[in-house]
Length: 486
Image (cartoon, rainbow, N blue to C red; front, top):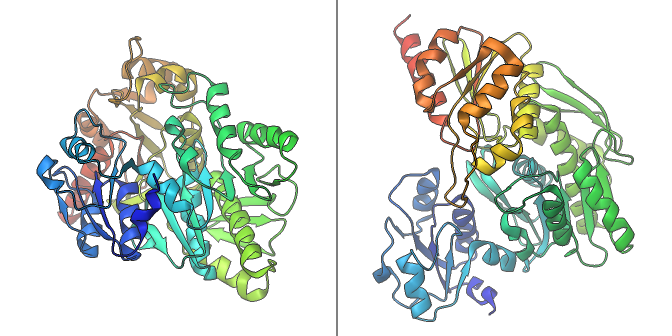
């Protein structure tokens, strides 16, 4: 089955679940190649609705077998749906149409280019966004696909600047990244996660190893030297594959992409790299942002070498890099500033792994040293919460107050244990004391938050659940107060 036959101009491709971030992004990339794209999804409104409508891509807001008329050259479906329950997938199969899941389609698409996959338990979305920002600033002929909307991509998750290179965020869940065809892999982190699929650390480490072994001869692994798991993967590959280039980055890394200094000044990360002249400034909080920027620069340097035969940081390129990083504003749900009202800054972040929670909150604390930090956190999946309970409970110490809620469950897991949101609350309260509160539903914490919040505070919602609604509700409430002169 050659999926790529459906990627030629004039072909017809139908997307089942087209409003998903990755699905919409791939639909846009194919649309830009002259493919006739259409699709379907639920009636719920997402940010991708506006993108699809702007591109003129038609889509149904229901799943009906009658939508599949046999004219599609390729049908791509989201992993969120199955042949047993989705009538369109079943009909496409009955008609013997060429059909594949999104990750296989993305993998086939990557085979059309010199492709780089960005992977890791956390950090991959921001690193992909930073890489795209630098690619645009330096004028490289590349396409970029991130796992979230990026402000510098016009509020989309794609960037289309040419056909020579493809840089994409690749996902480890259920080994989805094994469909990708990388010539470079950027590895941010390897830690225990997705416990419903990877029961322990060795199982997820081995999946990342399997992915990295897909690199061809003379391929490159760019890895975070500060992350033990990423370093372990690199160490194993070093013994197995002398034909690969291994490029470390980070605070402990030797070579060009070692971070020599990193501080906060005027709400900017100010950093210096061994292999790049002068200072770089990024208006996004956290030492993890410095790591992600170093990673993105290492990747873009590799692309520059491929494009031009060498990579010299002359004054023109230096200025382009500095300007791109200075203008970087992050991506959707990654330390995303929602707004400020009544002197309170509202931020939303997708961090749902203890390491990401801890580093993000520490970064916000360092970035806003004079402000109190109040965080609402909603843990995602029972299996992850149970496996990493102690790590989660100790990840909030940079905050002044913590609001915890029920666990945001996943349809993909079956959990029979006794860990609940209240279990995490009790563990956290034992560490932090009276500054920890619990409400089953996130929006029920609105009254508690109102009693705590004061001008000058930072209120941040964190997690992969739907507690982001609490932050937006509070922002609207305080904007109303501000407007009323209260």
